[in-house]
Length: 217
Image 1 (spheres, rainbow, N blue to C red):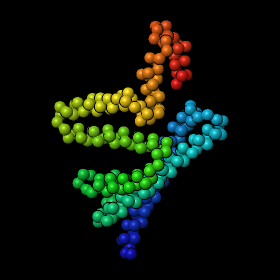
Image 2 (spheres, helix red, strand yellow):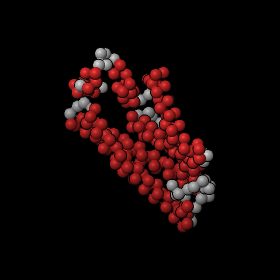
Image 3 (cartoon, rainbow, N blue to C red):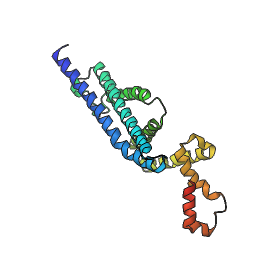
Image 4 (cartoon, rainbow, N blue to C red):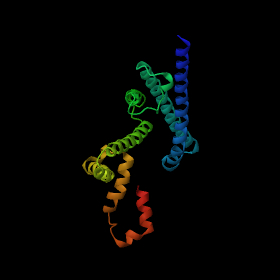
């Protein structure tokens, strides 16, 4: 192997390792506060049990992001090397529509994502749902940016309306297909007040009724 090729390989390997490190660190940063709050609010058990649950969630999230970053960047760089992209130019997050970076990113993302997130665990599901919502909004923004001005002004209301239409229709059709946290909140907002004998002015303004309603959930 020539010295130039060896230097290029070392550069890309270092980038992969830094991606793995940053993925692990970000997993801890983003998951720790979330896990502490949710465990304190909803998990049963003593302090040691709750601490173990927090540690497990944080470690799982961190490991997933670390593993994904490692595999994704390795695939992204490998695809670039196969296409003849110089190592210095073969960087993540620097490509534009005029390069093959978006295509390489899509292929590498699909392969790494389908492998690292193939199991529908609670942590994986939360990460994927977060990404899906952001990707959907990003795609809508990209499409609306290329649309006529009149349509751009209506893009967000149409997107918001379509989202609410879909979730409310599914709630009435078969709410079992929705996430349990979502259905619990929707039951509280839309269904619970229609049950029992609570539709009186006194119950409407009673702090006791408020506490009982929240405790029921």
